[in-house]
Amino acid sequence: MLVIAASVLMQSCGKDNLKYPSSTLSGRLTYQGQPVGLIPSNPDIIGSANTATLLLQQTSGAQEVYGAGEVRIYAKNDGSFTSKFFDGKYLMRTQTSRSPFEDFTNRAVTVSGDTDLGNIEVVPYWWMNGLQTDYTAGVFTANFNLTKPSANTARTLERVYIFLSPTNLPDVQSSTQGVAKNWIAGFNSGGIVVPAGSSTGGTVTIKVDLNALTTGEKQFLKAFGNNTTVYATVAVKTTNINDALYSKPIQLKLPY
Image 1 (cartoon, one colour):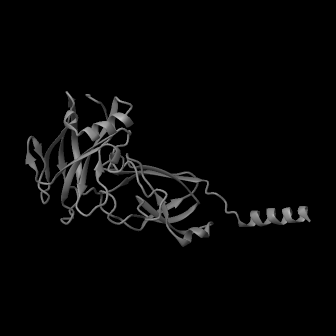
Image 2 (tube, rainbow, N blue to C red; image 1 turned 45 degrees about the vertical axis):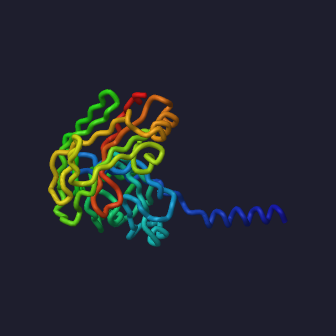
């Protein structure tokens, strides 16, 4: 009886289990061939709020179960992504009002074996050109020219940020154990220059003095940064858009 029961169980498991997807779909989100800097981390990556960078709906293919819902893809900070898929035809769209570029829908994608989509060109609401940073005597300064590739007048500039974190992926999430400094659009004081929200861009200068941080901020950075190393990113936030446009992480040494 035990042998029969085990045999039935094995047959049942064999019928119920679905084949794991074996094809790799990859690509990168770019603007004029340049990587689009996205939020390095995502608190919903194992949640259910559906805040993925891209969503793909299968329209035909051998694995019909994917007709029941969209497949979520979370792109990295440099805009690249890699994910396993079943072969088939899909329609790709963005998560509405999530990313720092214009939404798109119904982009046809065919997955057949390992498939590289190459550069997926998008239109950012705002773009950082010629980012230059300086770190002298504990003062981190960022200068860049801000432009507005998007013609969407509702997507105005909200603010710009400097994030400091002991992790090498500083963003709005990791800065909860670090530092987040921000300046609203139109701010112009103390050497800080940020264009007006309704403008089409201009020169930006922002800076943060690590020596002048609060005691709590310093303790966080020292404790989690192994007493020496932290990272910074510069970010541009668009009005009514969840995630900002991010720079690459920049390594800094603590001055204290």
